[in-house]
Length: 67
Image (cartoon, rainbow, N blue to C red; front, side, top):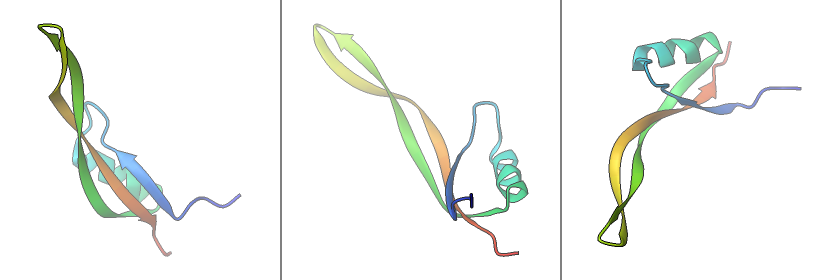
């Protein structure tokens, strides 16, 4: 079964962006887009639910390299 031509790579906790890019290259993918997605935490204050940003995750969209 053939692998997909597009794939998403997430920068894991404790991993640098360079390590993620190296991992993509080893799997034969080239990055085409970088996105930062916020991570929210639900907080209850005075009986009201609010959402506060507590971090972010970096996600790369990549395409299969032609070799």
